Image 1 (tube, helix red, strand yellow):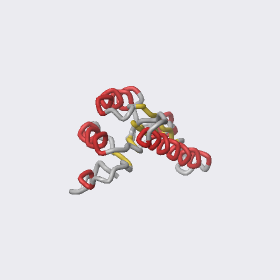
Image 2 (cartoon, rainbow, N blue to C red):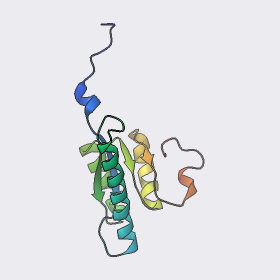
Image 3 (cartoon, one colour):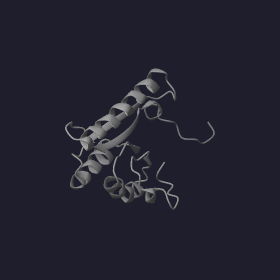
Image 4 (cartoon, rainbow, N blue to C red):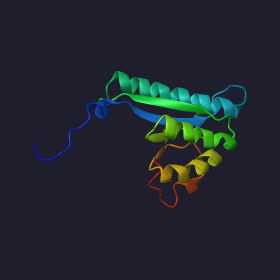
Length: 130
């Protein structure tokens, strides 16, 4: 042993959990869009897990915010503090994305692929948005 701490194998093989907040009901275009994003991510994760791309399973935990920014605080609390996600993905809309950014930055959690056309999320360069 060269002084390194023992590595916890539960951590190494634990699933990588990503969080997503959005509206997953059907009815309007905005509501359907969130569900379509969720389904697409779930399919991609299913394929990655079947092919053992990285040796760890990838899971997605979602929170239905009903497209209401007033529900974002509950979503963030649930996903970060209770589900302990390491990254957010599939977030749609400018209002939700801009609400999340400072909270995610303070929590050292990156935002992967927000679905919005607003360039202010990445310009100037923002290392927390991938």
